[in-house]
Image (cartoon, rainbow, N blue to C red; front, side, top):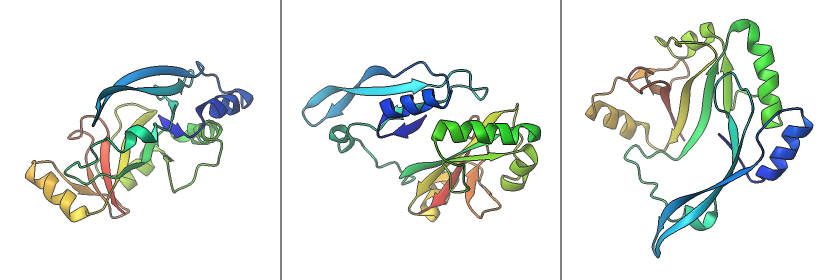
Length: 185
């Protein structure tokens, strides 16, 4: 899911761009607050027929609830900054164009989506091999202290490798499906 400050506007933009979707849906989820449990509305839409699986857009969460969330994971995670999608080489231009329509802007090397082929994946994440294509093969989490993350991963017996960008990652097999890259911010 991508986030948007205006999910209704995003739905209109997607429709105008010819991207099919199921419309904006609203669900509620319980959130613990200092005053008890309340229901937070979550608004989202799902894009129709994305070969990669479920792709969609979620409205930015209510700031009233955000300050009540516990953001103190031992690894210090601050943000999800990148999704890495691996596609067959011949489909790269088509997938790039499709994601540019989804996002309403050009795909860049700065995220939030990195598109690559299987050969590019091997170059970025040594030892990784997607089980099928297209596939979400990795995501990148921003952390303030990479040494802290490295120590936590070692303490928990998780294997750590290094990307060609110099970041550390937990291989997909150990991360239960997609590699988990850590980027120091």
